[in-house]
Amino acid sequence: MLLNNVLGRTVAALRICTNGTHAPASRTTFAGHYVQRQSNRQYLVRAFSSVNGNMVKQGPRPLVICGPSGSGKSTLLKKLFKEFPDTFGFSVSHTTRKPRPGEENGIHYHFVSVEEMQSAIEKGEFIETAVFSGNMYGTSKKAVENVQHQGKVCVLDIEIEGVKQIRNSDRLNPLLVFVNPPSIGELERRLRGRQTETEESLQKRLNTARSEIEYGTSPGNFDVVVQNNNLKQAYEDLRNFIVHELETQQGQDVFFVTSLVSNYKTHEV
Image (cartoon, rainbow, N blue to C red):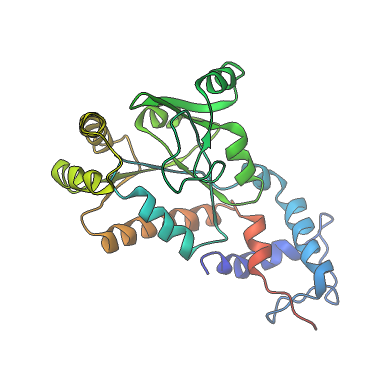
């Protein structure tokens, strides 16, 4: 798996206690492919936290995915989560729109009323908010923190206005990915194929998409633009970018405690 090579690069750090001595060999063995029982699993966490306490707090940089409705963001994210189930965690956004068929509250979105949304905004509970097609959307601080506390990369699927609010955020320092559809014509075909839009709402989405594409493809606004003409190639481009960024963070000693522990198999000695 993607993060398994971290163990090889961090064996020394994990085995060194705060006083500079090595952990007893009888407790933890890294040469083979095993750790002695559950106590050693807990030792990994303690050792890592004591040596790299600041890194645990900082955590990996969040991944922001943005693009017009129908650009293929959801499909790409599903493939990413399927390939790396222990690496990424999805930030569940809030919205005032009604659920679509098959959507579940707390899984796809937190579906709330306008009054609830406005109250939460006034209390400062959101990192970013936006109005899209007449509905309010937002990413709460709690949603991001819940993922980060698991030691995972927090994934945010947000609108352009939200990106503008957080792109220079010192708090998040996100990686920004824009998913670009082949053309407005193809986007319209995809949206009509969903059969979830009225003609009026469809035209609003297409008009919004034009401005989103203009902003998303302008140099400097995103770290990478993934051109989704072909799903296989688009996913490969997205994956390569993310893997490179995670490896760079690992090289800078920004690690994922939960992933380290969960990926390290426990066996009897």
